[in-house]
Length: 129
Image 1 (cartoon, rainbow, N blue to C red):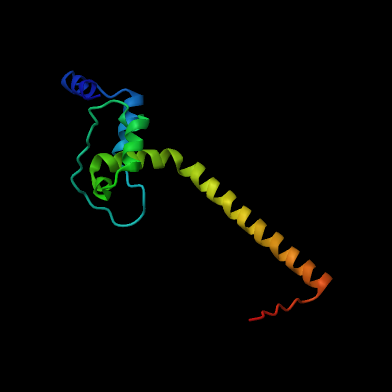
Image 2: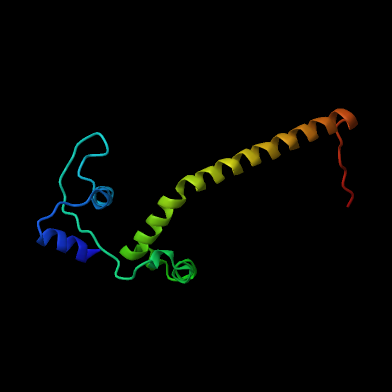
């Protein structure tokens, strides 16, 4: 919280390890990718409403909002980014499982169609007017 950082700064104390890890995750000081680096100004925001990103009413209000401009606000982007980070791995796993299911159904359909054509031969349908 802001008071903790202010107190540590005013007392000229080093950050405890858990807070240092949090700050390094939030605002990394080392380059994470290869290539050209540049220095840019960074602004960190802190939500004044504790746990708002976990409140089901807020999440439902964001999901059901008819105004698409809400998704361009910094608060909404932060909530969506945080939720995506926590769901990314399981979401990709679910997507992979669904892809395997689709391939499985396609294979079953192919096998059934091939067996039907071998058993009954090709069937020509005629329509009458």
